Length: 491
Ligand SMILES: Cc1cc2nc3c(=O)[nH]c(=O)nc-3n(C[C@H](O)[C@H](O)[C@H](O)COP(=O)(O)OP(=O)(O)OC[C@H]3O[C@@H](n4cnc5c(N)ncnc54)[C@H](O)[C@@H]3O)c2cc1C
Image 1 (cartoon, rainbow, N blue to C red):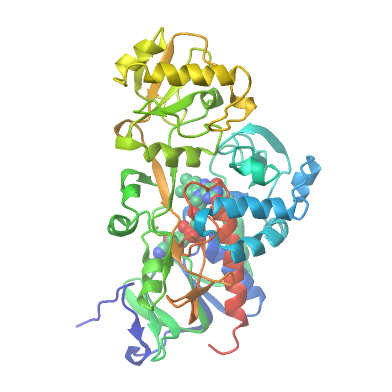
Image 2 (image 1 turned 90 degrees about the horizontal axis):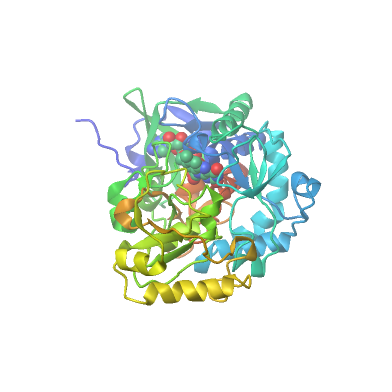
């Protein structure tokens, strides 16, 4: 009877019948982290075999906007060219806040020091950046410009602790979806350097010795199980687990309400393989969520309220942060209030339910069945301060502040059943900045590395995520994992 292999169970080396492939570094997943790990390991002189379960490389990253979050060191060439100084300390402070209560100081430190160089490195691998700046508030640039404000930089509380600078660096590609080009360049480079790429190759489980050190993995290629020996180490870069409902139910049940943001294979197999050899996980409950908010950016001038008629967020903050707060409101009920001057239908979901329309706020209050007087009081308070360019409770910046003045007024429903949300996971294996995977005692598991969404990296808190942080983290820490694995003398 043939053996059943599972990512949740490692195979003892004694049970390996033969080694079908022998390499220095074996990598699971040819996406953002895997491609960069492969390039660096190969450049460091290691033989590299990369196993990708899809028929082509690229992973979720090839569906992405191709935007990386970088800066610091005074600014990348493009930041400086457009007059933005970006001190390492500011990037550092921003990333520490973005990581939330469990931010990883060591990873943030390393990334902040080298993020500007990483941008240059990406260019050197062939990723094209046009070098032009697009002002305004964007999710991805609709043009082929390559520098945008992509996160919370100008919004409170981030702006109070870190001098704002635009840090979203997007591959030169007109419209959304530049990730395809971004990944084509990185994957081409890996193959050009002599990385052995195996497609339709699913990693099934890790192989360990009696000491618990990782010695290789089992992969299935064309229906056949192959045993791969990795002298220097195995790098898990198989993405996150947004596509695995059982794992979501266990770790991040709230994300089950959202459609997955994925290229299709974020099924948690990398994380499960890590757990199978004693790795610990971090922040598994965290995810990035999008809601259909702006564009049009006039909607940012509206205010969100919950069923108690209370505001709960400065609406000019990053849409993922707004989204995270919206879905946390009591009974999943929230509305965006607008007047006639700023009304618009969210581009992403134009058929949004308009829950109430009225000539007065009393009418809106009644239609939404809110406590009599509660909404009217909230609006009066907001209008009074907004007229002076102030928002003492939530610190929305003056740029987006204006009192409501032109009826009809409307409430766009962001109640849970009325909106389509999308999410990807931010929790994963605990790793060192080198990519070495840690067990529950904080000890390194010999021979095992992880990067990208298989690991818990820089982006690890839904309230703090900014566009570009996942690709920035995956590519940068993929490189570290590749370098570290290649430098091991005898695994
Ligand atoms: C539409 C969209 C837009 C996005 N835009 C951005 C953006 O602009 N900026 C940003 O920072 N992030 C963005 N993201 C998120 C970002 O793309 C991912 O978080 C990022 O790709 C994670 O990199 P990774 O290397 O961990 O995973 P991936 O790039 O997904 O690579 C993982 C690879 O592992 C493979 N794999 C999985 N399991 C196995 C297995 N058992 N055996 C072999 N192979 C396996 C997968 O097929 C995949 O190719 C976006 C995502 C989407 C879907």
